Amino acid sequence: MKQSARAWTSLAAGCLFSLSASGCITIAPNTPGLSWLSPNKPKVQRASYEEKVQDAPGDPKNPAKLKMAYGRLMEDSGQLAEARKSYAAVVELQPKNIEAILGIAHLDQLSGNIEQAEQGYKRAIKADPNSALAHYSLGEFYATQKRWKESSEALTKAMLAQPDETQYRYALAVALVHCGDVDSALPHFIRTIGDAEAHYNVGLILQEEGNLADAERQFALAVTKKPELTAAQNWLTHVRQQRTNGTNTATPEAPTGPVSPVVPAGHSATPGVTQKSDAGDRHSLGNRLSVQQLEQSANQSAGS
Image (cartoon, rainbow, N blue to C red):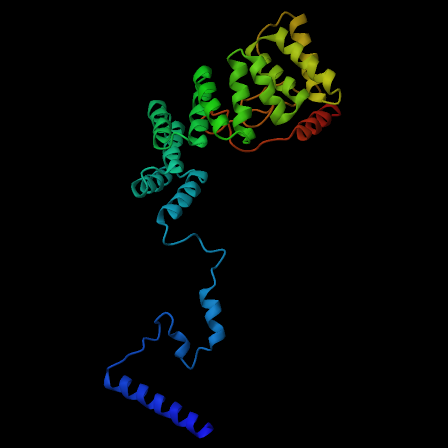
């Protein structure tokens, strides 16, 4: 039996050699699925060839994804012209790519092309009417223009499309306070940042607008609900001093020194802290500070 097996193996090898030598069959060294035939490449190496490298820069078969990532990198580094080229290339490949459309709109906003930026944000919504991000971006754009009614309408759609996104809900609460609808704003604030903190944030917005009487009431409620919220107590003291001195105007910046290091709410995703971008946008998407951080900052200032 062993001799028979050897004979068949020799015969098969001879046939394969003959066919290969005659040109009737060729074996490309890099042909997928046949590389295991090479005597210099053991079978165990196949696994390493087929493994996906986790740190590879995206799928080369998805150029839109790569261009989008490059565009973000360029925007973050301040190279806006290069960022625009990348976003435009993505839109050319995928005309309904929401992130790329919003990227171009944001670049227009940064460049001061307000009308063009607005049309860009609306274009994103037209491409995907159900996109929470598109509605949120338009709402935040309106907020930078102090078009609060339009902002609240767009942000309401964003919040309804994605109810669990606290950033959308917080931005809506801010817009509602600016529209004069504190009662509707408070539940959204409470859900995102807490009860006492909700009144504190409302107080900051009202103080910034010069509505000192209502701001004082909100700060007092915040202190009543959470006495350890030092920032609220500091602002309550400051507002009462303003009213006593007859200064019924908004303070553009927070009082310095032991009063409070907290800047009036910038009406952004950062509760109680103003965030400004290069375009003067006070609606930063990042750099959120927790209430605990605010309290620590206030305590440090009070102790200095």
